[in-house]
Image (tube, rainbow over the protein chains, first blue to last red):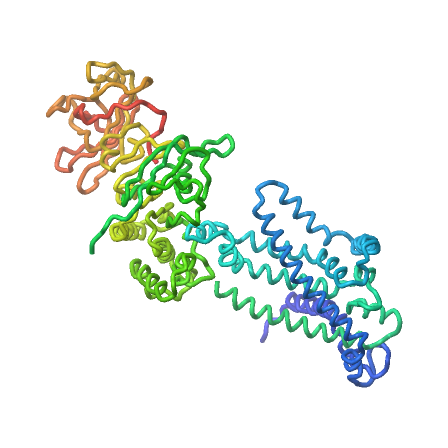
Length: 264
Length: 368
């Protein structure tokens, strides 16, 4: 006879409930994206792929997706370069100013998005950056840098700086040492920082809403304005696609990451 | 194989290093001869590693000059000094294989691939690790990792090789094996070796000469034998080998100095070099343990009474720890054939005055 353990059952049940609670809002969009009628009612009725078709063929949707992708890629590059350099600089600073600079760089993460958005908007109005590529990239980079600084900083904290001394004794100058020793060893931190930066920009909505223009819209802005105008299930289709892509990326990252982790 | 001397001399000229108010190195001068194996010996914080870092170029000099060969190098950055360094913590690049690690200095020097492969193979053969070329450092034991580090530091044929407690993290047995290998490699390379250690035995095993560091200064430079039999200071005498110290008020008698040890007068050759309290340093093998009342014999005219506190059989010798009336501990080591004494026995210690070393009491407390 199997031993019955009520504690274990209770634990399993509560874990399942929490998992459901965490996942349900995301999962719900998947059936909605296949709805027949133009409504976001749940549960949906019928089956159709027209909202997916609409996403790829309607320039409003597809262009905003491409815009978001381009902005996010640029932000990932710019924020990763600046954030990595900042993290290294802070790590190597002997004075207490390092901690202060770090705090300053991380503030965009703590300051309420709306406050930041108002500030950015005011400045952009006078400088003519509203609705421009530069405007998006600058604002999103500001928001993404903290993630890079934190991710790279965490990696640098465990990086053995004495390896750089060893490289110097073997004849490598500072630059060569950085590219052959430091960079390869803090690459995991840089890559996760870049990923965070990309995601931060890709789903940024608050600041983007302020600085958007009809000619240049990012995907989250398009989703938001579509939602406020009418109940378009294309939103659900977009949501499902993003959900699928991110799950794939993170899943692959986990598999790749653990495999690499086992080696060292 | 011929062993031409190709090492470079290192001249440390009046070098000082300050960290704020702290003096890590205080006006030190030293010459390491070409091809010599010199150890820097001293307790932690004595300035030995600071000196090594100054030679390697990892720290800037506050004052003085260092020459490599005849060339002043205090303005040459570390990566242009062409000095091999082996660290206590190995410092192997974890993302490179053993072969890539060893090839690293050759890559920096633009050595062509074929030549590089040949040199890497040769260096790995010297440390018996040919079979491990494609492993990663994390797959090797500590001893193997340090061998790789050694191969990497010598593959580019530096005229000077510095080692900073390279065996500090290894167990005793492995340390002894690697000490012999380092000696062999030194003979084969002919480069100048500087070896930092706090282990006097290791320094004695490896070095041609030893520089004893204390409080940012060099107390004495000499062969192991010179340091042991003729220590310049009480610190050196106590740091190298076993010793006992006699303290008492002193009086100069011609070319001898007498010390009053609780009423018993003993003497040692020489006169005080500097003012202040004087001590006599004794080596265990120079002190004889004899039955009370035996008195002076065979030139051992210094005789003092004591009680055996510990008697240890060492196979080839007996080691006695004796306490004098005033509480001073004395260690004596005698041949096993003689008369043996048990713990608590009253005995006499006797030694030839010429075997005692008269030194100024510098306040250094014995042992390590």
